[in-house]
Image (cartoon, rainbow, N blue to C red; front, side, top):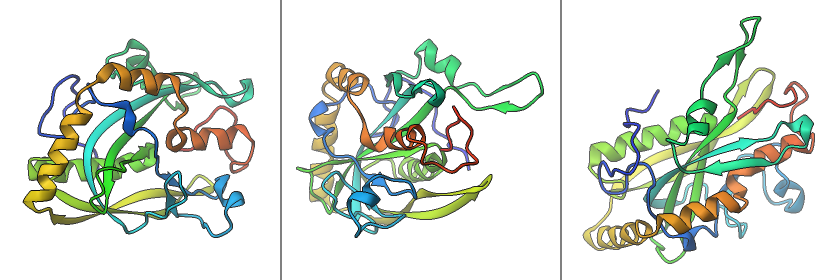
Amino acid sequence: MTSNLPAVQNEKIVPGIGAMDETDNTSLSNFAQLMQKTSKKLEEDTKLKIGDIVDMNGVKLNGKSFIPVFKFNVFTKFAPIDEGGGVEWRTTNCKDQRVVEGLVWKKDKKGNTIKPEVSKSGNLIVAFDGDFDNLVIIPFRSTSLKTLNLLMKQAISDGSLYFRTYSVGSEKKEAKGFTYQVMTVQVGKPIDKKLLAQAEKVYNQQSSDYTRMSAFIENEELPGIDDAHEELKSGKMNKNVKKGVRPF
């Protein structure tokens, strides 16, 4: 199901919803990561399993309740795997001409579909269990973007991104010879007035400094967004995935 969110920049549709134009970089310290079959963390922590969602401290988040307080998109251009991989550039600006051109699906001379050169990630800054002092960023990449779209439609219906709680999980998908995990979200209950006031306060804080946020995103590694590409670079991804092709 496709999203019915307008493609806008520098405009808030309802509280907490819209292209990220201003926020604070201090919250960008803890990312949620979805464990794929080739995730390096599985080797580092034998207690983890495929489909687990953990933060940077190794805390499992599957099934935990969260309140989303802000949404922003990140657009990344990765260098081809056979050329060494790595991030060529990254931006939050959907009107950047590199983004506009890089998100286009193309066809080669034989009529085969070529995936866009630019990868899009939709990201939620959330408070798990009502803990607004320790925010976590949940990135939704490619196939998981459908899940984020459904959450955003619910938020539009509610009139606010932080009107209710949600819980995050995962499920297995299969396509073109390989299996992978995608994010899932369960809709929870509306929050009380006290939590709503806290969420609105955090949202306003996140909406205070676009320049620092953009600079941080463009110059720092983002574990929850970059990890799949690093697995491709290391040659650990499914053998059916061709060089230079992003699986998700």
